[in-house]
Length: 98
Figure 1 (cartoon, helix red, strand yellow):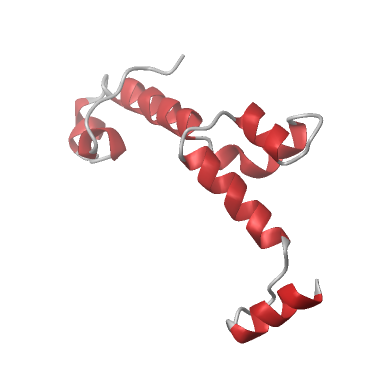
Figure 2: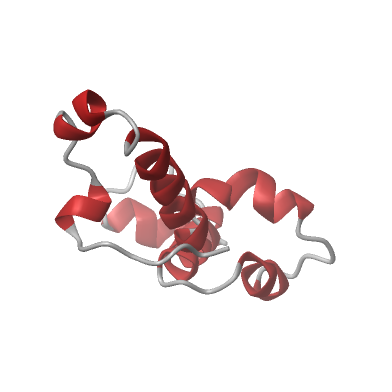
């Protein structure tokens, strides 16, 4: 821990602590499409509850499904659809996850 603190000091990282690496590791895996269950195992958890509580916003499939749900509901309202330029429109349409 002493060496890590020194490294943070040299790199001018304020409030640096080892948990930052764990957090970055989890978020990068989730953004890459690794399922939450596998990330939870890699973090050493026996249950996905805590992992889901802290990292659910970064689950790629979840975010894509939420965007599809919103676009589907807005497709019935031409005024709302004309006023939006969301991720699906920018990054091509995707199939529903579920």
